[in-house]
Structure formats: structure tokens, C-alpha cells
Image 1 (cartoon, protein in one colour):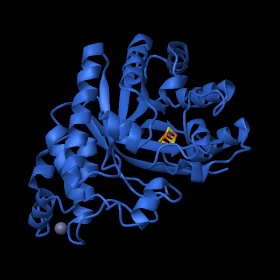
Image 2: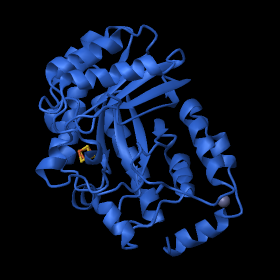
Image 3: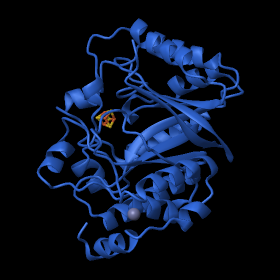
Length: 324
Ligand code: SF4
Ligand SMILES: [Zn+2]
């Protein structure tokens, strides 16, 4: 069985440019989404869910990727499921530990990320994974906070996550002795480009401040929002109540947040967007994406600062007037 999505892209590991392989494994799907009749309003992962999938089929997907991709220059593997890797009813513990065991055998890997909602996180589960990976690899625990703004996170995105739960989870990450990766959205529904920039930058400041206070090494992964099929966001988009994010806003977020700590900007749509992705004009869209990809690797802001295009002044004018 093939996974839902996989892609090799640039990343920075402890100050050094490298490559990461992201794998989205098909699972029975996010329990939170199933219990709440759809889950987070921007998430399309249920589209990939396989309700009757077995543990063996999940391992098959991993093996398929490990055999198909050339991993010689890949030093990080991010295992995403369609929900929470630490939820025993989505990924049974035997399968979970076998996935980690197979990754531990790739000797040149430097970092492995796994992701979960807060309610399934225990210090023991994280420690067990860390121990299997062994001393030579960084284990990173990833969580979707999406926004530090309570209204946006829980009323608009419907994340079902309090800041208190997030901070308790960061404390567990600290106790388990691993690193933290926090996903933040850029431009959830019902915000303008200007508000989206402010929200993303403030959210990154909150994450790095919280991690610093608790004493955890942290990165932020920004997820510029794209429109997935069969989501509340798609309904809004089709009713012209959601406008696709402009890539210049992503550039602005990087400029304002790069001083806080290590950033990663997600550029994939996990085969879910039908091309309804963040955009700019035809002459700069590709250039901005390439520059962001290089920033993901180098964390060097200079090329981002130099980006320009004839469409930029109009973008700024419309952004400042609140038209977009
Ligand atoms: S974003 Fe995560 S928690 Fe929310 S519905 Fe999607 S998989 Fe579930
Ligand atoms: Zn342009």
C-alpha cells in the first residue's frame, strides 16, 4: 500500500542545511475529526482515511517509501498520520514502535518527528520512542497549535485545544527530554492578510516564549493555508467567503518572525488542495516559493529580504486598505 503523501524537501537541522522526507501514512483517520463531525475546519485528512486499515498495511506504506526514495541525503523523517501517532486507537502501540524501530535502523538519520494531539501524549510514550531511536538521533514531538489566539484556534479553526493543554504538553516534552515542533497556520478563515500576518507572528512569539520558559528546544512550522476538499473551509471558499493567501504575506511573516527561532514553512498540499494554494502573480509566485525552500534550508533571511515584483506594491496597498 502506498502512503497518502510523501515528499523530500529542504530543512535546517541544528543550524545546518539538510533534507527531510515527509511521509503521511494512511490510517483509520483522526478520532477527534470523527467524534466532532469533521474536526478542524481547514483539515482535509479525513479524505485519505482508510477505516479498516491494519497495522501491517501501515508498515507496508513505510516500507514502500523507504525502498522507493533515495535516502542518501535525507537526514530527517517526519512521520505524519491522518491524526495522532500517539493515539493507540489510530496507531496501535505495536505498529507504532515497529515504525520507530525501522527508522532507528537508518544510521545516518539525524532527526525524527512524530505528531499528536495533546490528549494522547504521555511522558512514557515519548520516552519509549526516544529510547528506541537511540542516542544519535534527535526526537522531535510535533503538535498543531495553529494559532495562539484562543478565538481563532477554538471558534474558527475548531481545534479543541486550550493554551493550558498546550503548555502542559510542552512540559511533558521537556520531561521526556525531546525537542518541540509547533505547527501554526497562516491565514485561517475570517481574517484578512494583515490580520493573518499579525496572528502568525504573535503565535510564533508565544510558542518560542513558552518553550524558552519551560526550557525546551523548539522550532515553528508555519502552514500557509490551502483549501482541501470536503471541509468547512472549502464551503467558505466556494461561497467567496475565503480568499486564498497571498505569498507576499508569507514573506512578511518570515521577515517578522525569523529572529524568534528556527522556522520551517510548509509548501506542500498533501495532494488535497486541487491547486487552491497560496499564490501571487505569475512572474513572482515560483520565485517566492523557491526562495522560501532555500530559506527552510539555510535560515538565511537575505534572499527573502531581496524579493521584489511589480505586483508587490498593489498587494501592500490592498492589504493595508483591508481589501484582501
Ligand atoms: S488538524 Fe489534526 S486534529 Fe484537526 S482534524 Fe486534522 S488531523 Fe484531526
Ligand atoms: Zn508578482
